Amino acid sequence: MLRYVIRRLVVIPVMLVGISLLSFLAIHLAPGGPISVAADLNPKATAEYRERMVRYYGLDQPLHVQYGRWLVRMSTLDFGPSFAPDGRQVSDKIKERIPVTLTINVLSMGLIFLVAIPIGIYSAVRKDSWFDRISTVTVFTGFAVPTFWLALLLMILFGVKLGWLPISGLVSLEHDSLSLAGRFWDRARHLLLPVLLAGFGGLAGMSRYMRSNMLEVIRQDYIAAAKAKGLGERQVVLRHATRNALLPVITILGLSVPDLLGGAVIFETIFAIPGMGQLFYQGVMARDVPLVMGILVIGAFLTLIGNLLADVGYALADPRIRTG
Amino acid sequence: MAGASSNFGDFLRRLARNRLAVAGGAVVLFFFVLSAFPNVFSRHEPNRIDVLKILSPPSADHPLGTDELGRDVLARMVYGARISLKVGFVAVGIATAIGLLVGLIAGFYGGWVDAILMRFVDVMLCFPTFFLILAVIAFLEPSIYNIMVVIGLTGWMGVSRLVRAETLSLKERDFVAAARAQGAGDARIIFRHILPNALAPVLVAATLGVAGAILTESALSFLGIGVQPPTPSWGNILTAGKDNIEFAWWLSVYPGLAILFTVLGYNLLGEGIRDAVDPRLRGR
Image (cartoon, rainbow over all chains, first blue to last red):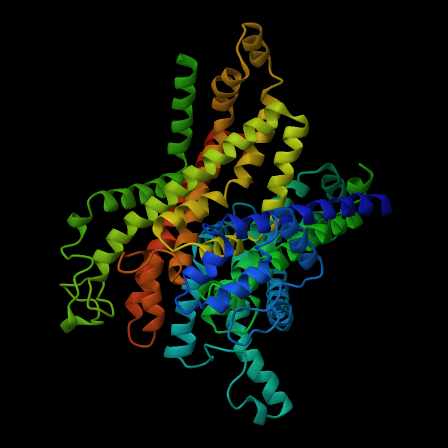
């Protein structure tokens, strides 16, 4: 097991160098380089501002020196000060936004598991039944629904027409004056729609994935053996089949990190939630190069960690992987 | 080539038997016709502003209502269909071309060429795609051309992995050895013998890819960094829907339905093609 984990870990530095190279090229291949991006397209750029940019990127240095400096910055997560008027450190800005995005994603992941896995199991066990057909059609529709559109519809329905739920932010204006229970309730109401939408895309994918895993497992001999032994269907399905069908789901968890981060940009922007996705969107709109690059690199780190966890989790759960 | 054409006939027959795939194909065809003859489907100009009819609900004259500048929503959606298809096809064309080339070269030559190309793919996959697209857009002027190119350049990795896997097994086949014995060069073997046999999974990936690209374009346009007004796009009509969410539901509902049906159509067609190409994969 340890050897397997080490083999996986060895790849990480290689990937990090790749990430640093690619992101470095991304800044420098932009027509005119970073200066033009931030200054020429920005009418408010002054000569002093340009100078600051040159110093920030060390553009007066040769390329390999610039890259070396970028590598050092990246490994210490120092992305320099943001170009926004407040001029705060990019890493500080990201740090305070990550918990919000993470909370919503973890909650929505829980929702996906609670809903998608039972649906997947049931449609596999009752393949071609009405339940299976309806859930299949629903899943296909689910894949095709643009999340931001669904967000709009739910906002119209629950926020505007019915007035049941707030449609922006994390807390109400009067949040601080509420009792403890009141604050919790207030937050829960604000989180309900975003969590639902963050999980929506995954819901369809996960139930489909669980269904096909389950179909695969049910066909195997040991399931027939368990049935032949006289075990009830319930026990065969839940104790014998589900366990094995759940294994690959672990990997999906880790591998879904990039999609979740991408989705965060959309729903955080729509619901005005102060998370990393909204920060990224604001950075893009303001052409705040250090901020955009910082979040891009952090996003790649998180993806890499997700992949690693997926590999290790899978290896822990399934001995065939680590010995094979 | 008689064998190939009858294979193709089999493929079409299997596809035609799949009701969902046919329905998907019909939707796809409908939007093609729509974007080929926009003026047949809408009597209004997509960009004609009418200040007397700002945000008027659906009526006989404006079946889907008007937007915040009094422009006809149906007309804007019909012309928006054209934009969506264009972005979808060009972006997927770019992604497929790059993916094919990288996959064929990596699979055929193996060794360090393969190692370098595939590590590059791994690194690309480390960046959340939507982040990558947004970051690049931040460095460029938002325009429909940049959107197509950026979606294409960030979407080829899956295809290259597929093609590489196919190439690895195809290059060991007897017909490749036979071609080589006849003196065919690498380029001829790759493009005449391996490529045609590796196309089936690519076709499936490309069909599903069009759906993905249309979704991405609409999300970008919705966020205001995709297709720029006054050029109509389903995504940027939805932006107007969000801004007028309290008074004009029709601005939010119809463009979303158009996206939903288009994407659903391509997905069903893609799944159908997958089943028809290789019946063993059915139900997966």
